[in-house]
Image 1 (cartoon, rainbow, N blue to C red):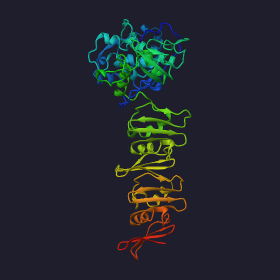
Image 2 (image 1 turned 180 degrees about the vertical axis):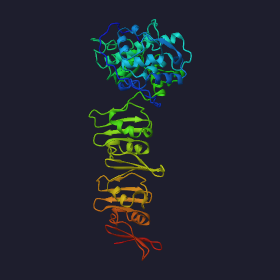
Image 3 (image 1 turned 45 degrees about the vertical axis):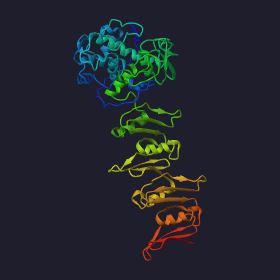
Image 4 (image 1 turned 90 degrees about the vertical axis):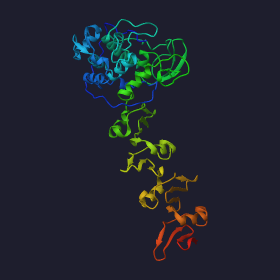
Length: 489
């Protein structure tokens, strides 16, 4: 339902956004979220494309719109005429579709990419080489309510009014009752046959089809999403999986507009979700590494944690630790330890990868997580890590960790397995290696609870006797090739 709302004489509240030039960004693909079709900041990003960018895009897509021209009759837009003139629009001239789209985007402050995705989801105008006049005259689906036919129209009328309506409904959804004209109510701020209780964001909204059948509940997260549902009051619903689109829902009629909007927007441009400002600096340092946004970002109520999903992982923010990436097997292990609420805490630095891509690690508040292609990802922390460092980390005698740090219930003992043995820590003995034949003998003696007690020194080699030894709380374990391993108190 896109009814005609724009009056011919309106108030003068309008801010002309600065005109900008931008190249068409790389595509991204995100999961459809009917409760967050597009972030507010993305819908209002009016500087993403200039007129030349739009024209080049349409030409590259072999769109019939690229070759159609129209009279830019600014006077026919009513009160918007003065804003088109102020923006430098070529009023009264014959212009391309891209010119009309561009200037409508500028005077109403709407992302041109959103306009292009809308004319596609409404009339397939971007991918149609030879659109009909009817398609062009109803480009934005404006003035085409669900319950009746479309009003007489043309391309300029459609783009001007359709883009205006998106901004108008967004402002009303965020309780701005003075944008463009002062009002005391909003047409979508009340219950209708298609949704209940209303379209104000921050609440669960139930959607009904034209037969009165309830088919979906979405928690509407922002005003931009509310604006799209006010423009077209149907959530994506496809119980039968029609037209090759994902099966979605179990009852009710087929509606695909909001899904198609997100699909085309993200196929051609970027995600409909903006990067959280807390994450932006780190993202800009690693854009090719982390990929594009795939989901909206979130911050907890105390703003002590923010996170957002990208193609290749997440970026996590905490005021004390900053913003850092979280991805791959290191993130998988972090999740197994309980994320930030677990024993590792928040990441405190970047993921570092060796030049041969066979090893990576990342620091956390309480240690590191270390990955190798042979051993997987495991935490490395505390006194055990300190001793591993003395042994030269993975390049030393122990190799990589191969299992978790295990701590007894009384917190007086912990150990971790490595490629070549274990590192054992006791609160009265410190951390020491345990490996090879000496460890085998220690195991026979009952480990730390047996005859020998905890190790209290590193392994030592005596070249005079060709013997290895390691001191324990209650004696020494020796090893030599001809004799094997033995314990002496």
